[in-house]
Each structure stands twice: as structure tokens, then as C-alpha cells.
Image 1 (tube, rainbow, N blue to C red):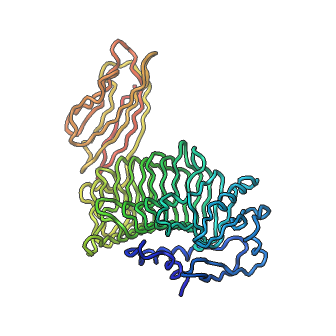
Image 2 (image 1 turned 45 degrees about the vertical axis):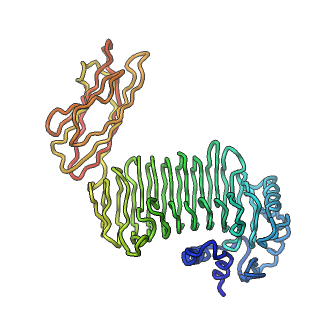
Image 3 (image 1 turned 90 degrees about the vertical axis):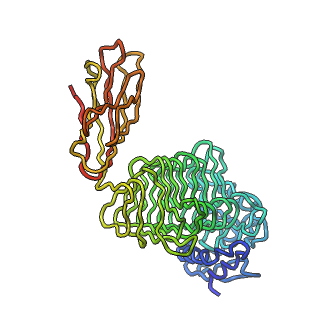
Length: 496
């Protein structure tokens, strides 16, 4: 029997009757990516005990045999077996793992390294990770296993400090069961985290869940699967998140769920399986700078993506969309729930003809993808003007929008900041949206009155009135971006 068949045999059928084939595939992929650690050069894997409960590795270098019984501070790593961990899937190894972590914290190594060798290590509680800690194993055979503990509904890994988890590394490990593979509940932030060659499977809530500030995170060659959520960040502050060569498999609620994000890049990701009706595979709100590069989407949720409150455009580049057959077994195109947000497709392909609502930008060749509502060709026009204070009369200091030469549909989103004109005055910020259908409207009534005025066919002005009793008009900054099918409106301001 192959190694993967042995490994899947460890998972009772009651946990995955409908997921066995998908889990087989995910484990197959994950095992092919695992690498040896340290001095191990030739690996032989054998099942030991009933049902293959314990895994061992044959080593060709005799020096590494000491690692199983020595904490090894001189080698820069602390082995949990030196503190009594059995790894037989029956013994509670929590105490030994905690002692190893305490020992690692007392070393001068950065990060403090705790080694999880081959085995199935059961625990009765969560493992609290200190800051600057590296928890690493030997790949798919190093298992933190909770799948048989039906009463264990806790995260496998959590942050030790109430402030959050900083500068931690998790690599070459498999995490089975529990409520979460990793749950971070921080009062301040979670930052500078690295996950490499990690498998998280069969969690009851999420593979990874973070309450806020999930930043400067690098994920590589990981497999997240068989859980309601893959990566779920419920609070603001996800930024500088880079995931490369990783997989999201069988997530009923969603593979990626972010609330407040900036600078998220998914490269070479595979999204497959799962998908409860009414949910989306990717669900992102209040975000900017989101890129999916070279990703593969197959048979996930009927709604592939839900976007709200996006600044600029979410970009899909060189991505493949196979479609979904969930529900009735017939392969059909993914749906998109993006409201009036903008999605850019660059050199992508859809196997099924895939209409996309909202604002769609197409660059390069995108066979099978087309806009159902608004097609935005090319790139966005954007600009920013800073105008110094002047002494002009009411409404003479105005921004003009000339769309006489514009073609097709367009939308201007602007932000006007009025700076104090005198002592005691305050800064005033106003959001402005202009479309071909816009009419006269008061944008702000006080302290300065600001109006959008239609001055003719295809022409508007944003009129700024001075504060009563003041002869000096405030200076202002105006930034904007325009989405348009063809020729775009021209923005003008009086500079004298």
C-alpha cells in the first residue's frame, strides 16, 4: 500500500465519506511537495502498528539518530521527543510540546526552533506559540493530530501573547482536526509570519482565522482543505499577504474571506471543490491592491467572487476558470457578485462562456470572458491637483468636468479636501461621484458650501463657496479616478 493510502487510512470514514477522493488528491499533492529537514538524505516510510498509527523514517546519516533523544540546543533546535512526546496518536503529548517550547524560548537562537519529528502527536489543548518561534517538522509525516478527538473543538495553534503573534514560522507540518489549524486573537497585531509546506485539513471552523491585522505574511506550498473557511480575517488590517503555490480545497463557506485588505497577492493558487449555495469562494470587502496571478479555479462555489468597497480594480491575470458543476452536475460558468466594483481580467481564460456583472476591464486575450453590464476598456485615468488659497468670489473657484467628448459609459470618483482658510477653520473632506446622469446636488452645506452643478450637456462644475465673512478662500486638493469605455472626461481647475 502506498504512503498516501496509508495516510488517508488514518482518517476515519465518518469524518469524510463525501470528501475522500478530494482529500486523497490534496494529500497526494501535499506529500509530493514535502522536503527533508537538516541532514536527512534518504527516506523510507513505513506504517507501524494498527492501521498505520505511527510513521517512522529511516535515516542514512547516523548523526541524526541522536536528534530523537536530545534537545539539541547546540544544533539550534529543540526536539519534542526529548521531553517525552510519543507521537503514537494515543498519548497526550501536550506537556512535552509545551516543555520543548519553554526550553526553546530560553535559547539565544532567533527564531527559537522546536522540532516535531515524524509521528502523530495528540494534544488535549491548544499549543500556544510565543513570538519569534519556529515550529517545524519533516513534512506530511509530522502530524499534530486531533481528528479522532471528537470532543476536541479547539484550535491546534494559537498566539501565546495577548498582543498577538509576531515573527513566527510554521513549516513542514500537517495539522488535522480541531476547530482551527491556526487561530490568532490579537489585541494589537499579528505580523511577520511564515508558513511553508504546511497542510491544514478537517478543521470544523476554519483552517486559519484571524481577528485583525494579519500583515507581512508569506505562505508557500501549503494545502488548506476540508473546512468551512480556508483563510478568514474578520477585522481590518490584512496587508502584505503573499501566498505562492498553495491550494484551497473543499471549503463550504469560502476559501478566502477578508474584511479590510491592502496588498494581497495570490500566485499559482489552486481553488477546487466545496461551495455552499449563497456563499462565494472569494469574499473581500473594503480593499485595494488585490492580485490573483496564474491561479486555477475549478468546481468551487457557484459564485466565484463577492467584492464590495474596492478601491481601484481587483486583478485576475493569467488565470483559468473551468466552471462548476455543483448543484445539478452540469458544468456551467461561475457567477460573480461584484456590485459596481471593477474587476480587471488580463490574459485569462474561461472554459464556459462567463458573463461578469459590474465594471469589467479586459486586457490582452480573454477567451470566454465578457462583460454583461459595463465594459471598461484600457486602464483607469487618475489624477491629483493641489490648488493654493486665493481671493476669488463665491463659486468662481470651481473644478470643471468636461465630458462632451467622452464616449460610452463612464464614472468619476473623486475626493475633495478643503484646507483651513484662517485660524479656527477646519479641514473638510468630501467624496464625489459623477456619471452622465448626474444632476445638481449639494455635496456639503457647511462650513463651506460645495455643490455639483450641471452647466450644460456633458459639462459639470464642483463649486466651492468661501465661508461667510472670510475674504480668503481656502486651498484644496482634488484627487480622482475615471472608469470609461472610451474617451474620458477632462478635469480642469482655475489656477489663478
